[in-house]
Image (cartoon, rainbow, N blue to C red):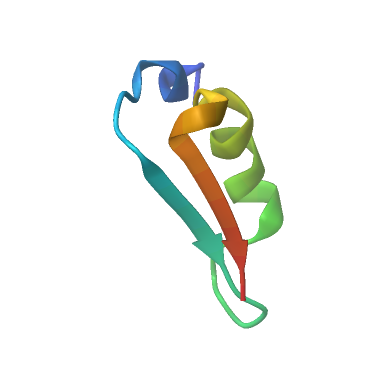
Length: 44
C-alpha cells in the first residue's frame, strides 16, 4: 500500500464481512492510513 491512504480526501467506507474475500488483514491498513475523520469501518 505504501501509505497511499493518506492522500484520500473524501469520506470513505471500509467494510468486510464474515464470508467476504476481503479479510480484516487487508482492510486494516487502509483504515489505519486514511485520515481519521475521513474513514468509517463496518464489519458485517
